[in-house]
Image 1 (cartoon, rainbow, N blue to C red):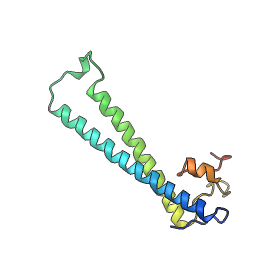
Image 2: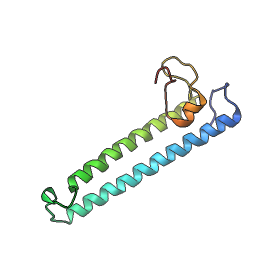
Image 3: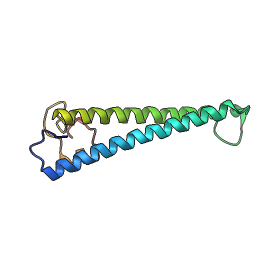
Image 4: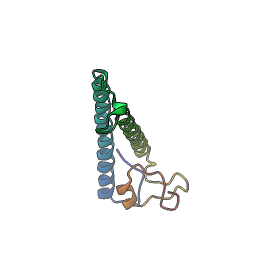
Length: 122
């Protein structure tokens, strides 16, 4: 993988590449883990005849399903943003603001590897 960022050193580019790949892999693992959790909640509720809507002991199964489902949606969105960032890296456009085409600072890219905007256009 190479990027078109001539203003960054080869060490900085290597660090950004490693960071981008690391965060993308973490997002993939998070989504897979959350999906397994969701499937386990659904399977457990299918085998139970509990009246979770009136259980004074805690949250309802429906609430837990909705919460995990929401987390899965967020993980999928992060995974998609990172896949797009990797595509920009491969195309040589990673690290440039999509609004003004100015280089996004190195520190911002380290903190938010999938970002598409400079500080001004964030």
